[in-house]
Length: 270
Length: 284
Image (cartoon, rainbow over all chains, first blue to last red; front, side, top):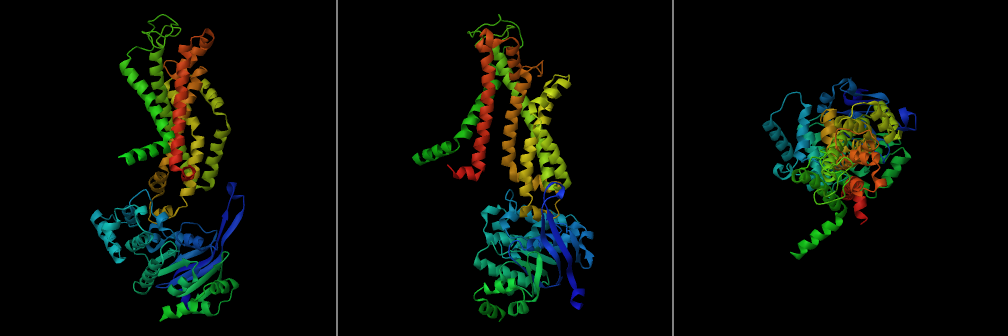
């Protein structure tokens, strides 16, 4: 109970049912089924599950991009649907799976980065915008002159994903939801990105929800792990507990599917 | 140098449909605009002998009233184009607004707009046009444009709706939302630019359709009486039974120009589709 009280984000009995057909009279798909969990400040929480298990739907629900069918989400004990959109998105931000699809390819990347200033109530001068964008880019190891004037298709996957991260840093939110952020970047970039996330949580005290289907990445980065299967949370607990004594058959299968997991795990912990 | 010529040749072969279409269209536009400058005969002036075959004074002969057919053709093409562009513009705009609203907002609004669109789609357009045109007594160019424009939008709305519906689930739209962009900005500045090629294609088809609709309506006597259009030219040839009396110089040219316009727009549309649609491109 004590842990719940210090929760920054709390999800209670969340259910999302998609309906199809005229006036919603068609088929029903239960994407998220009675899910409850919480996220503490400065914590990295991993959401593991196969495609279609409802993890992206949960991300979209938390981001207020979808309305839940039932259940509630609280941010600092206030229902997120009672917080104004802009105020909420200043606190909770996201990084999506496909960085190329996340930037509008019609425009230069600079425009997408500067769009975030619309979240702030006060008008920001052009000079101030430039300064903040440059700071964020440098923090993430990108040269502003090299990337800002380019279109998404002129940049690499790693650069694009870092731009998305830089976009988050400009907003400086409390919670970052990262939906499979490493799936479109090459292996060397993957570690760099994971380390940036770790640093954000440990040094800047940001809370991160890390969504992945890759159990080894989840173990590398997270403090706690949720395993989702067909819209439900089937496993919930600290990394070590899930890894060494998995309860649900799906988790067991996931772990057995990763060959050298134990060696890697020991290596990364030291 | 030779490599350049070969490359240019390859491009011409690849885009041949588009090139032929554009060339035809430019030629027709040049015909009516240059014609108005270089052939200053009043198309409505009754100053020649009636039903004369082509000669040096009247390159395409004269009609039953003794008016010059070439002058009528030049002005008729110009006016038909103007009606086509304006009506096509109106139809495309309505289609974009209805389609984008239905596709983006979804839910009840989508169901409602779909119902209206589908109702319009199943009503035979020509029948609807005849009913509307015969109820409205004013026979002006503007009325023609409005009648065609407000009846031609449904399939554009459907096509745009489908595109918006698929684009709105892309991640850049989600990102724009959580960047606090208002809804209309997301639709106008994020989604629509990504389907610009599609909109251009819809517009070319709408223009072709509008020119054909004008011809069809005018030919059966519902056109702008005071104006010379290709449709109105056909109208007079039908009334005076030009095919029966064998005055080929009178009824063939307007029909031919209408056909050429429709073909050129179809070629442009098809050519653009081949360029923008990667699936069609790979098949060559």
